[in-house]
Length: 191
Image (cartoon, rainbow, N blue to C red; front, side, top):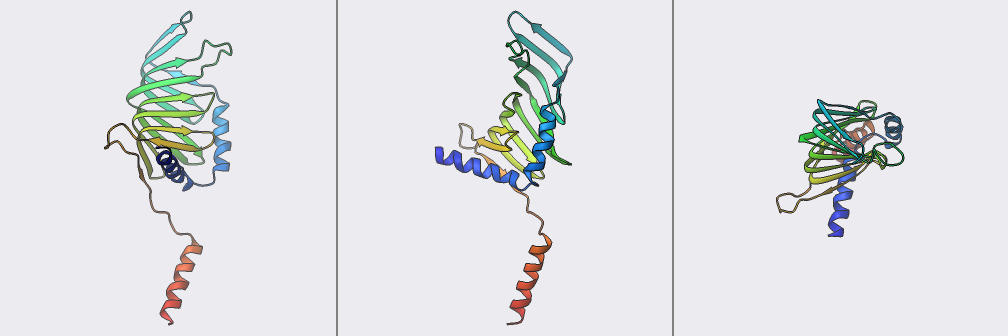
C-alpha cells in the first residue's frame, strides 16, 4: 500500500512539474498568504461561547488570488488564543478552488468538500476531487495539495472504480528539440 501511495504521489507531482519554474510561483503564493481572508455569504451564525462559526449560501472565500466557492462553510480555530481562523471547511455540489500560482498560471479544483488549512497552507479536497492546471488533470477520491511546497498527493476511494487518474497534455517541443529532430532525420536520410 505504501508503495502504491509513493507511486501516486510521484505521478501527481510530475503533473505540476510540467508547469514553469516553481521558484517564481512561491513569490506569488507568499503574497497571497500575507493577505487577510475575506468571506462573503448569504447567512452567518456565530456562537462565541461554543466556538462555532458557520456561513451558508453563495459562500465566497478570498485570500489574495485564491478563491473558494461553496454552499456552506464552517470555520474552525477562530476562537483559539491567537484569534485567527485556522481551518475553513467548505462544502458544495461541488465546492471550487482557484488560485494564480504564477503570472497567468492558474490551478483550479473541485470537490464535495474542500478543507483549507490557512496555517499549514494545505488544501484537502474530498469526494469526487479534481485538480486542473494547464490542461493536466488529477482525479481521485481525495487530493491533498500543499500550496507552499507545490506537492500533491492523491488517494483512491474504497471501490475499485475510484482509482487515481492523471491526464497529461503533451508538451510543446522547444527549438532545441526541434533542431535535434531535424538533424536526426537529415542524418538518417544521408545514409
